[in-house]
Image (cartoon, rainbow, N blue to C red):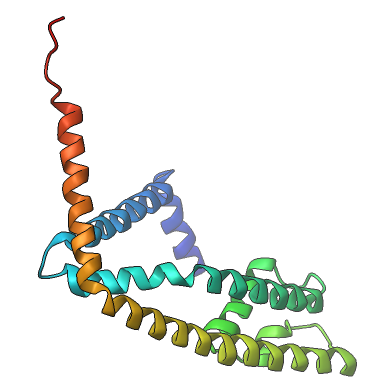
Length: 186
């Protein structure tokens, strides 16, 4: 099976992965552009704008969440002693802290490495602290922040929609003036 997988990789042209990555990013950008375009229509705008504007209020929350995640990532990395890559430990921290999906010993203790009783206790402390602070505490806060922000944006939906429509008209009007300047015969 491994040999078949390697032969399939060898038959791919060089740069195919990069091309697919770029194509995926362009497709993502185009779909988000369509979503952003729909904000000016009366059918979609008043319902869509509160959702889009709700995400703006999450910036400071993600900064705090990032610091917590980095702290737990650093703590878990110090337990590993170089047995796992930083990416693997980041994936473990993400799975526990954000998704709440985790098997403690299967993930944190690599095969062939004996963990003493004192280190084992610290891994449990990390597990409990990370699961409580990130999974329970921070994820409940993000739900609360999203709910509060959405309520505020929903109340302002009509005003926000009219403002967005005015911005769209102004943008196209200025673009039209820029491309169709009258000739001056001085």
